[in-house]
Image (cartoon, rainbow, N blue to C red):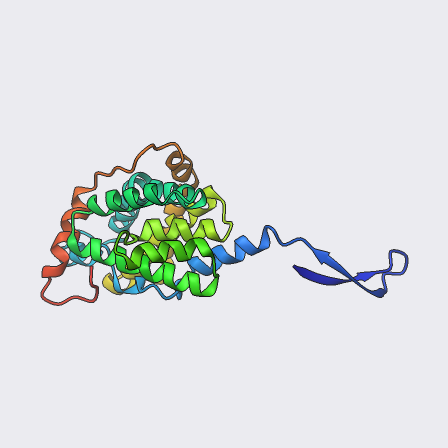
Amino acid sequence: MIVIERTDPEDGEPTGAAMPIETAMTRPLLALLHICDSLFPIGGFGYSDGLEAATAAGLIETPAELQAWLDVCLDEVVGRMDGPATLRAWSAFDQQDWCALRELDEEITAMRTSSAIRRSSRAMGLRLVTTWSALYPDRRLEGLLDLARKQRIGPALPIAFGCACASAGVGLRETGAAYAYTRLASTTSAALRLMRIGQTEAHARLAATLGRAPTVVEAMTTRVRPESFAPAMDISAMAQPYLRSRLFRS
């Protein structure tokens, strides 16, 4: 709770009395900003989700082609697969439905065609929950970590993200929007290291994609189960480990 000094209503001078300000909205917002920070230590900077293989093959070379990649990432990967999984994880964690959470984690992991992507998602997910639990202790997060120690759950990154946001009191739709932002921003960051593109141009492409995010997030809330069809991205992700020289793990 934030406390400010009360002022006299007639002359505006401080009275010395303290007046509390409700922070029910401020705390979840700050937590959301924290988890979306690119410096948050989950190792996301080491993964391109197949973009490196796509650029090496000459599939993504221009700003327009990067825009198309970001659009597919939002519409297919986030909008139909990872995003709905994140929202379902938020609900399962909020209800402490560990069985549903485990089944969802298994499903979203099995949907990833690349073994490298499966490993990276679980590595980042576990780092996220471990770090978030240390920074913002919550007995429910301890329960999730206990399942991870027993190897009964990864958790994959979308699952971990949904659980962390739920534990911090972040709303369902805000969680979906935040997940979309973090994945798109991470891809844009990777593009800056892989392509001949300036920062302003890259972020203009990111901004254009983010402009459609609210509509995609709203559609995510109505999806019953995760699904996806992004074959070009899947093929690039599977080709990534076989690049002769690479910057990213996936």
